[in-house]
Amino acid sequence: MTLLELRDIHFAYPGGATVLEGATLSVEPGQRVAVTGPNGAGKSTLLKLAVGLVQPAKGTVRAFGSVRTCEADFVEVRRRAGLVFQDPDDQLFSPTVAEDVAFGPLNLGRTRDEALAIVDDVLGRLELGHLRTRVTHRLSGGEKRLVTLACVLAMEPDMLLLDEPTNALDTANRARLIEILQGLDQAIVLVSHDDGLQQAVAPDRLVLEEGRLRAL
Amino acid sequence: MTHVLTGAETEAGARHLPGLSDRDPRLRIVLAVAFAITVVSLSDLRVLVVALACAGCLVPLSGLPVGLTLRRMLAMDGFVIAMLLLLPFSVPGTPLFSVWGLTASREGLVHAVEIGLTANAAVLALLTLVGGMEPVTVGHALHALKVPERLVHLMMFTIRYVDVLRDETQRLRVAMKVRGFRPGTNWHTYRSYGYLVGMLLVRSVERSERILAAMKCRGFSGRLVLLEQPRMRAGDWVFAALAASVMLALLAANVWLVHDPA
Image 1: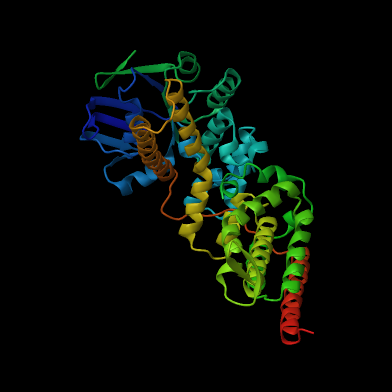
Image 2: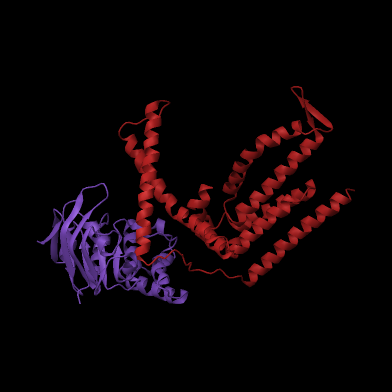
């Protein structure tokens, strides 16, 4: 089953220029796709469209077997397709790391104890256990990035949508992130300018130009 | 209040203390409020001095740096000092002394001393009991004390983002400075500061939208669930009983001394 299919998507921000004009993208289970393209080409918008944070002017979003149009449709999509935001500060809003990681599972109706078990499991898998009780805004940039990934993985998604994940990461943290991503079995849509990251994580490359996606 | 929100200094202080930090945060908040109410209802100066001393005893227990705590208390005194100085001259009563033709009354002076003692005792207790807590802990404790969820969330979000906003302000200010901006008393300065504040507002609104989007992506439906639940332990009950008896003793002493001044 195709996990995600964006077909003939047209999109323009209110009062702004048109960003997408007939973009088409499909992702199979376990597939890893990298999307590149000039600044402002609409790469981040593509990811937002996939989880229904913005609605296309024209075109269809199909995810996990059905066409998704309204807000209610996207609730399930957002759980199964984990979007990692460009700026970790947008994503980490809970006071402590444990609470932030538990936020998703608690929203999915898990009990406190189940959520805590998930927190320990996810942080353990990413070797971030030592950050458990840390206050989120006092983490380093690299730590914040890895924790945002943990937050998304705690929801047990089928695919990950990553928006410039190596932005502002140092070499060590970047290597760490690549290692983690290579070890995951989820499908990945990677928006990035980082060539090394693309080659390591998502060898299938698409370029977004003039509102359309084409293979590179 | 910024220290309460940013917790920049409190964390360092809160880490190595054995006494008050072990107590249930809910208990500490309740006791601070109860103590404030107790002190406000005291009127005898001698009892007030004892109350202030009791609050002072909490300083070593809290493990907060003494100098810092006293400085914060003095900061509060700065607000009331003008009133305290004027009170003897504005309350009519037995003349005591006069300055530049203005007569100070004995009653006014007593009033001023009473208010000064009350305010300092209450603030000192608040600083020692609540000031040493991580702001996050305060949020959780307030939630456990059934403070409306919206207020707790507002506080938690403020704690989380006040630093981000401060950094953003700093970045913008540095950006202004490196282009030769020097604040002065002129329209250019006012306008530039206007832009700065406007830009901060715009960025904050945009950020809040991104945060909401990120929360939605993780299944947010309008309710935040908090993880930790504080628990009252034996030590907490002992401390509560001790504090309650001290407050009752203060109240009793006050009643006794007011009715029987001899």
